[in-house]
Length: 175
Image (cartoon, rainbow, N blue to C red):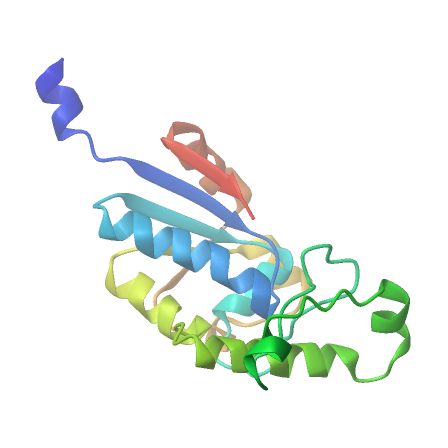
């Protein structure tokens, strides 16, 4: 039993359903970390999560509206200014044209300032580490995508193919 437990390769099955800049990080960080630990990883991208597999990521934005964790610190200015917590009411976030673009630019600047890898880089690292990325075929069809809209290395399958893998996985997550 001990030898079998020692030779067991842990598995992670992760469903990514959101395709915004801020929600793009959790699946790739978890997948690359698990792969670095020697785990087998399968990522299933469904609905808006498909945006994370597209060749062109320039349209990824932060969605501040209704995001209770959205208040963040500014990525510029003197230390005292950067330390302030900016709690902006949803009414302002929804009512000011261009607020989503501003929030996206601030998040991108914070990412650069902190030296955090971008989504494209994390995605490439995941593929290099052997993470299996699966695009939900039903979602691909629903949104009218073609296989060539996505990066190389993506498999296409339905939920019926992924769910048995998730059932057997040591860790299954939905983000």
